[in-house]
Image (cartoon, rainbow, N blue to C red; front, side):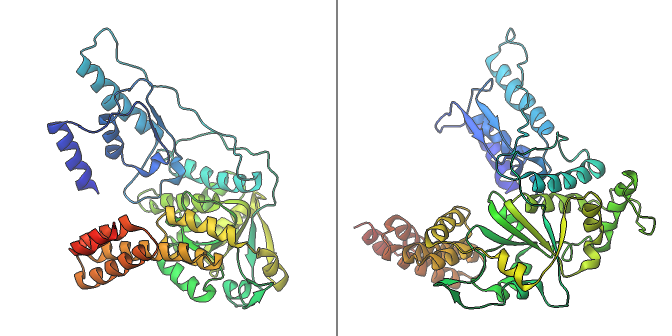
Length: 417
């Protein structure tokens, strides 16, 4: 991606931009872009005084290779948008231009105060250990009431996922398990595959990168600390607790050193993203209790969580059935996020054959794109399957594109007839 961005800058500098000029540009989730990517937008909109709006959250910067603050974007905008524009216009009388003030949207209308307070506790750690990596803002508030997030504890060694989803079968014609407004969040694809083996189609399972931009009524955050590369180094949290007068004398901890504990910044941001995906209920469950102790102790000392034993009654109360229409709606949201596997599962739960085929076709096309340089034969097979499915459901343009990529030009032409 970096090579592409550099190439675009060079070509735009030498050849100019010949596309359609925009009057206004609104960029959401701007924290997912690098400064050089953002700088590309100066070529498509000349209205530098009032034509740009950038929205985002620096605490959600979890994309690899990106460290984002709004102070950085303000500096970039002043130097590469405003000053360059003034130089091109030779407008000496116009001055150097002025950047609008930043607006902090502190009122949260989606999530209740209990979740926001837990999220703010993560932000407080970021402010303490990595003040130059985030914008320091006032805490978010909410007028919505909800129960405090729950730390799930099990009486035995039984896997919590097995306990929650152990009642297989159908109830009232609907599959037992989580609904379309519920999700299990895990760290990465490896953890996701492991959980899917246990739950099958009883629940949506997403990793933290996949869940960004989505929201759910209920979230089960599973084994985040147990799978963390920090392992026992989470104990550096005790240093902050000591400063706040929250530390028990029996708890030992290493001294924080940014060079040694720099990965903590990414871990805290991922934790923040996971926590803020829920609108109502949040459950946090760990298999490795020892690794989660520092953060759990931190939250308990601040009275931000409640602790519940995971029994059959609670497991049943956690599960909320969804209608086929709700599953269909979730399927299309995941389709927009290019999460074709989970979208397919949603359409299956909705008994929506068209949606299921559509998601499978997009998934096969994406697989073909991924395999193009690695295994051309498998790529062609996947692309042909995608083309046939697209054609069968009336998506002629997508079918034609696939056949064209396969150099089957006659079939590509027929797809449009």
